[in-house]
Image (cartoon, rainbow, N blue to C red):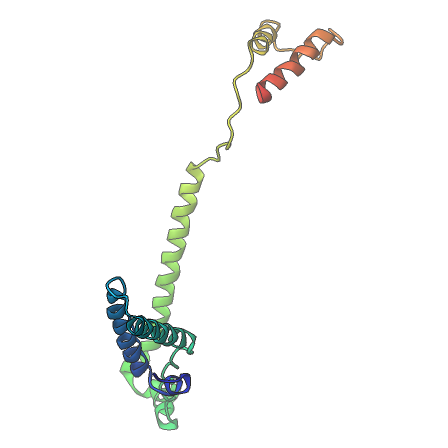
Length: 179
């Protein structure tokens, strides 16, 4: 059995290889578990499974491998080659910054056209109520027909207060939402 200090100092490839061997050995021993009743063999199976558990735990607890460092920055001579003075002296390099600008304009145009397409689709959409209203009760439908027959005065005209219609409207609302 290897200790955690040995596992932590080894390379990631060695840790993975050790984990694979440990898990294979534990799987092999676990297959023998139902067929044995020998206490010594049961103890060996237990220690193999315990070792596999320890190997897996230490593998998962170890920090991930450090990514390789970024490539070194260009030297001063490489920076001088990319300077403005070298671009003006070399005709092929002078066209390159313009191409980058044209690429940015083309990208911006494609963004604006995609935004325009989304806006056009949104104009055609409308938001639906999540919970549609229930249909009006028969008394409310009859009242609407009566108002249309009276010229659509709205009922607020000279008729005054009608307790029966007020009660009917209140009950219609109750039935509409709680009926």
